[in-house]
Structure formats: C-alpha cells, structure tokens
Length: 111
Length: 116
Image (tube, rainbow over all chains, first blue to last red; front, side, top):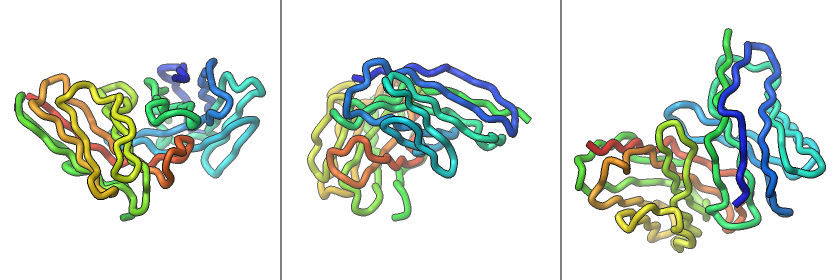
C-alpha cells in the first residue's frame, strides 16, 4: 500500500494562498494522486486528481514533480469556508483497499 | 438520486445489540465502498462491492461485521453484538465504474454510531 504523509495541521489567513504537501515515496507507476476535502459531519468530497505535472480546476491546483514522490495541493485565496480536513490519496492501479486516507491535514483559515 | 444517501444519520445502541446501516448509492454506480471513521482520524477501508459481488472485505475488523448489496444497488452494513470500540462514523461511497480505483468517489454524510 502506498503510504502518504501530510502535515497534521496548518493555519492561514483569508485571502492567502495555501499549499499542502503530501509525501508518497512508494507510489506505483500506474497510481493517481487524488485530494479530498472533508467538513465536520460530512463525507469527504473530491477536489482534484492528477498523474503528473500540473492540474488545475475551478477550486484548486495540483503540482506533481517528475519523480511523483510528492504532490502539492494549492488553494488560491482561501476563505473561512475552506476550513476543513484535506486528504491526499494515492492509488488506482491496485485494490480497493489501497485507497487509504491517512490522517489528513486540518486547515484552519483565520479572519 | 442526486447523491449518496445514508440512514440513519445517527444511531445509538446498547452494547450487545445488532445494528443495520443503510446506503443508497448514486443510481447506476457500479462500485460501492464502506469506510469506518473514528473521531479525529481519516476514513479506514472496510469493504468493496462491484454490483452485488463483495470483492474485498479485508478491512472488516471482525466477523461481527457483515455487508451485503443483494441487488447491486442499496447496501447494508450490519454489526452484530456491538461493542464500544465500534463507535465511529460509517461512511459509504460509490463510483461509476467497476475496478477503476482512480475514479472520483462520491460519499454520503455517514451514520454516526454510538455504542453505550
């Protein structure tokens, strides 16, 4: 199973850009990197997914270096409503069990 | 339906009781997953269905846990003789295709189980 490592928590202020890095040293060749967001009392929600280089959608960007051993989720101009837990997942080429969430990163956005 | 629906939203059980948790996935989604999330932790994989077939149950913590999806749509997670350590949020997720574990997962809001 591809293990991921993320910071436990991060603080930011409204309007700032936030970058959360995930380490996944033993990522497999066919694995994808996926990020989810979870608010209290809700299930995780898909944010973005990538395989290599850079992916951007309407809410975030995902940067993946050439060796794919890490990835960085970038949230531009965060607001208070972005306060949540963010999970990095690595998988897709193996079994369902391989989709391990880890403990995630608690992002707190301050006014 | 518009999303993944789980019921009940909250369940309180006395130790030793049996409970059944229901998941209605998005219509047409082939894959269905159950996760257990303890307080302050990330979701932990329990089991995976492809249509009605339970292809992976390696995450079920004991033989007191049982899941089924008899018609390939609604799924039920049953916990027999509940213990205090079973207290957690149980999340259900579905995805469109079979065996594509890089696909986006759609989660329900979960059932919060409290065993007293």
